[in-house]
Length: 498
Image 1 (cartoon, rainbow, N blue to C red):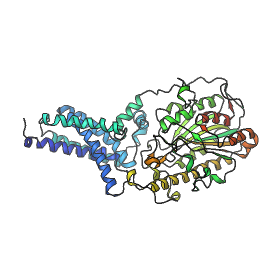
Image 2: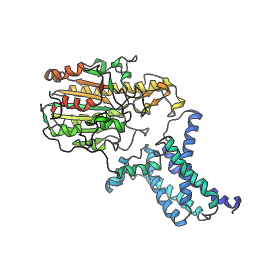
Image 3: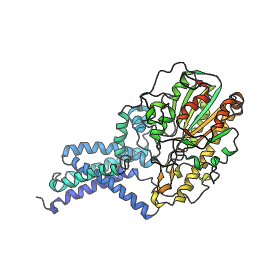
Image 4: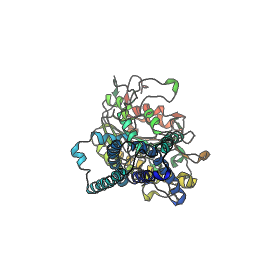
């Protein structure tokens, strides 16, 4: 058996190898993370070390055969370094949408991304790789195999252990998110949609409806609903606006809530079926122009529904909620302006980032009314008041955004309406819990608002009256599908008669 001193060159090489991988790949996933103080930094440093430890085992087995390492590692290092460059420089998130863009983008468009910083970065990568391979030639890769086998397997096993404890904590970071994105890209959607919509009709040829699909907004933090803070000063002044206080959903994360909202899928398990109908398919079959304008990455669960729209536009498409440079929701408004000009009868959907964590990324400085705000991504280091303050500031920004949508609709010459619903709520310290994808009353009571123009109210007073009467009734998100079609004045045999 080799003595420990004989293994020093191998140990030194693998330590250097892992440091290089941290600097050029895995570290990019942590570079933009906001942290304050030693404790926060230490926690995320430990997280980075854990991530890199899981890779260390893979790198060890990759290094055992010379040609496999020289070719395999070199190719992987160059590919992942390319993703890391954009993560470092633009905080771009590796998602199935980004993988799709990488695979399907035309060469002439891709060439526009080749900038001097990118070229210089890659030249540096090549130089580092050259010296790393040169050092690799000086060691005997299989030396100490009996010493390193069990630790290497343990490193790999750590990945599965940590993912089981906290799903996504490693898979959402480089390099694992590239693999996850590719798997999701090549998997076929499982949602079965009804593509044949018969006998759908519309009552009018002049009506514009904007459907705002929000994110992580709980009804009880809206000033409209009696919240102690005036978080909706602009909406509170709007006429013909109805805010529903008692909407329920059991789906507390986007991947499950959005497809249920956008189709006739019921919340109740006992009424589930195999095939569902997109609200956009029914509207389009009746002659309504449909357009999706989104500021969120499309998830596998609802992407097929989104593409039942006649046109789809994604704002800041290559940055997800994990990015700390994600575009603000007001970037959706110029596209809304263009969409409103295209047809006299339309349904335009705006999919917001809304109040999704990290809250401080969701609004501009002039909406920072409530302080102190959060200053770290590490939730345990924050006070509950910081969390609530930052969250309420996102609601102030939502108020500004929705008021802007309403002002645009007021300028139209045809009847108009706006429907806003959040996919779910958010936990803000109740029972010591935060964020979403859990259980809790605040999570299951999302914000739900409808506004009608004066001309809509004059033409369809019975519609406005029926929604006003339901303001405080117990509703579920099952109602959104039917409410959208009712407001659009679209009729279908399985829908309630007007």
